[in-house]
Image (cartoon, rainbow, N blue to C red; front, side, top):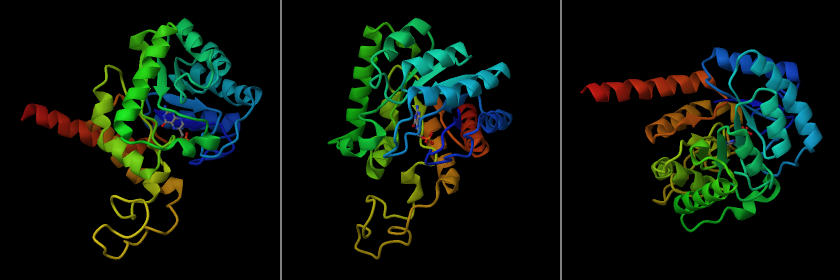
Length: 285
Ligand code: PMM
């Protein structure tokens, strides 16, 4: 799944594809590079981000969805608003990606049910402005799985077909770096659920501090040795996190993910091709 952010302020590629024509061109380029699906979004979920109005969000995404769908692209609409989802489906999108899993807009579940289309329910606890306050877990993997299953039941209750629900553990959403690494390590517990799983680690902040001591986000190495270089330096810029993203894409594939949501399609395609070759060779051995 290639990311098409039509926003002035996304953390990873803020503003680059804000003009509709640039966003459409970018989407077509991602398809040319091998993306199977394009995720079009008009609201930045960067920590601390202010929400656009519904009108602003519609004005950003609808022309882009319509133009890309007219070119035959498979489009997912990344929105927490039922009206934006509904108008995007009318414009040709065929999948709803709601990072709040239906929690942000009480009308979303019934709208998704009526559409009959696949619905991505991501693990989410609060809007970006204060999501960090909610990054508290005794056991992040168990709690994410339990909260995702609660979402599934609420969505099914509202009429969404169980088979239409795709789950996403929500990397970076109300999670600190340690939580994200634990989630990646325990991803097989999410993919063990009877739903396809989408994984979105691309360029996220926890991939920008790979020099930090393993097992802690800052501070000295557990052995008491000097902190490795990079532990306290600023994170690498988002655009320099693509090699790390390719690595997490491979781990996601290995854990049984259905799809990965990425900015850099060629790097991820290569990583997934490596996984597919090893998988096929293992099958033959
Ligand atoms: N992450 C972002 C936006 N939308 N959707 C899903 N399903 N999963 C994610 O992890 C996710 C998402 C934030 O990243 P961006 O600002 O680079 O788009």
